[in-house]
Amino acid sequence: DIQMTQSPSTLSASVGDRVTITCRASQSIGSLLAWYQQKPGKAPKLLIYKASTLESGVPSRFSGSGSGTEFTLTISSLQPDDFATYYCQQYNTLWTFGQGTKVEIK
Amino acid sequence: QVQLVQSGPEVKKPGASVKVSCMASGYTFSSNAFSWVRQAPGQGLEYMGWISAYNGETHYAQRLHGRVTMTTDTSTNTAYMELRSLRSDDTAVYYCARVAGVGAYRPFDYWGQGTLVTVSS
Image (tube, each protein chain N blue to C red):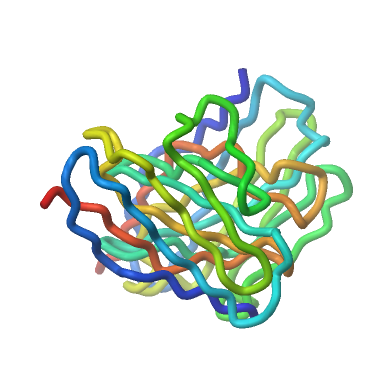
């Protein structure tokens, strides 16, 4: 099974900060990586797929990069609506989620 | 617009079974696969398995193998997930999610609202 490891587990930031979350795969997954945002009591929402393609309707302050085993999600200027938990997911071999990164208010 | 509407919350005793439904609308049902994902209280997302609504192909996560069955009903555009021999650590919110394609190698582009299953004696 492919394991996905996110870091950090928790991130404290302020509105306007640039935020970066890292996701590492236990083996190469090419570019078959997605990022999801989840708010408390809600279902996850797809933000980015194929490592760097923004899902329709997602603000351009979100961006993704990477390939192979190392990936990043960047929020260029954190907004109040962005405080949430973020998950990476590989879909190269079935599907596996990272353990999540909670972005909280500093 | 695409919608996935799940059945309501369930409370079950240890050893019982639960069957959660996920009714899809707004697209051609057989054009996409479904996955089921669960989230225990305060924990992350756990992939449970997937089913193709096109040909019924399934895969189940190893740790659930033998206890879970996923099915689809193309006459009602509904996907089902049945989990048997419930234990307290099966207490979680269960989500159905649409795979962005007929098979694997796609992310999950739409999600149901979640169904809370509580296992308690």
